[in-house]
Figure 1: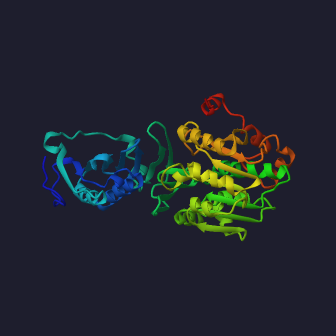
Figure 2: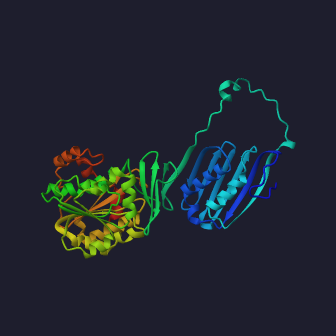
Figure 3: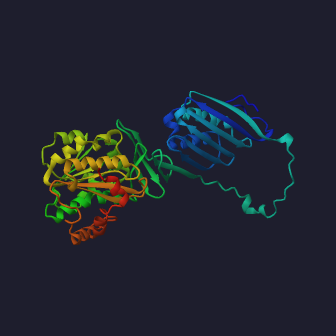
Length: 444
């Protein structure tokens, strides 16, 4: 047992490996709950010690804690964290004498911003207790096995969108492409293996390149094509939120739209989307768009009565800056600002993942618009927890989103624009709710 510490000088090996058991205290809780930062710290610690990295695997637990291992040619570095205690347990095991594990110790103490750490070194496989066997490797000792093949680093790092009971994990390539703590929220973009680039806000999935069409086509074309069918096409449209640009892109497919106003509170979302999600954000440069960085709640509060034909509430989940977008006062302003035959639609959460918010928002809208004028519909979005997501359609004049639809015109529109999710059948079927959702929304 026993090395003093840090970068103890290299010594003649009297064992097969050096094993350091580490405890770090007073660490940054934020860092200890952040897979990309932990993985990068572990990779840097291995590299600084001179190790050859083979693979890395990390997993996030709900609601707190990360476990992971970096496999190196000389053995491994492993970790488990308890962010709520600012504590991390680390296992540094190196074979041979080419890697000094104490260098990794120092690197990790700095990376985790630990107030202090303690460690003990154990010599594993002490040579004076071992007898080397004369092993005949036979055919293994051919020319190919003697070739020095540099290992390829494989990574298994996962982003997890979760609550205390349900989680969805998506594997990504490691370090975020974009990461910024804005005045409102943490904004990140990850490069995932299955879904392309993915935008996340406060560790919640907002959209990904591969499945965002389900969300954006359904939140926009259901109200817009309903209005067109009754010869009241939307000319002036307001989007609250929607900083990734996907909703604006879909709105501007409708040629009769004269102007779109988008009010997004967080400039970092727009900037990240412009740089890394061009397939969504390209329409943010359209001359018909008036892009405003500001508070959508305040904007609507001061907007003129009956000033928009269609209002799209493309908000994030009801936490942080989006909390007010689920309030009665906000939706009273939405109602006031709609033209007499105007339509509004809002993302209204998952009936399974965010049941309370889903039910409360639906009842709130029924109280404002009238129960007969509010209609819930569903879409299935793979990167959202449970996959099932809801939208709520509301109108002042009773225009029904299914009975008023012109299926032929909707089909022609979807075909002309090569839509990936929306079609006239999906439009109509989306309003057919499972019995458990009807029961959930029933009022006493």
